[in-house]
Image 1 (tube, one colour):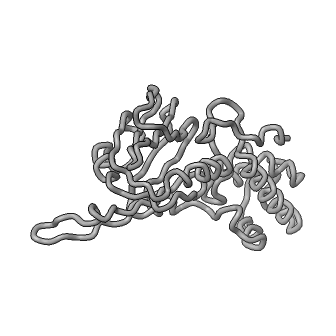
Image 2 (image 1 turned 30 degrees about the vertical axis):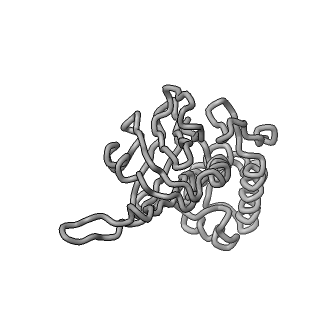
Image 3 (image 1 turned 180 degrees about the horizontal axis):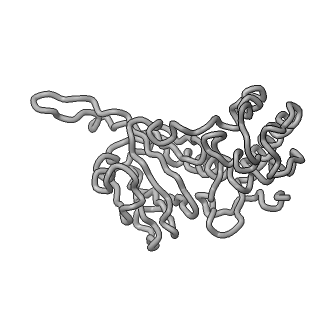
Length: 252
């Protein structure tokens, strides 16, 4: 499953192509990909929205959508009301990924959501295992509100305080998205290796020095993985341009 570095890489790949582009049409070919609203409402509501930004929260991609000038209001009885800003949140799960292709380019059977752009291209969500999910909401907190802090944004002091009152084994805690957002099996293992801490170490036994060592290891591993475009252990994770991530040779 793509983790923080892979999601961050995909976002950096997408932003130059998508920011400022308007979604002029949408097609959902596998309805279960859309968690909310219904697939039909998703296709209707996402049209005529401009992509203002693409960011990340944990393992989620967050597309910031602004209603186009001509679609920013809707009639309600005799009057009009402003349409809210919307957010498209995407969790790639095991095999989800994005392609940007000319609209006329062939589509394979695993491309389940198609967003037509105003420049003649198409943003295509490809997901062979069909586990990926999308949410179109007016408040991202509806989806990601319970996530823990970002490991590259939290301070060393704040990180150390997260362990206060915690019990249990260290690795499962680090993989708990409500504790710290974005880490999974690959980068937890790498961080623990660099910090010289056993995955089954009792969380409550960590000293202040060990918490600091773990904090630095997590940041070092994530930063390096982002620089190298993430980790491609198999063919399931590819960058938007089709290239593989380059972190695998660094895995211990």
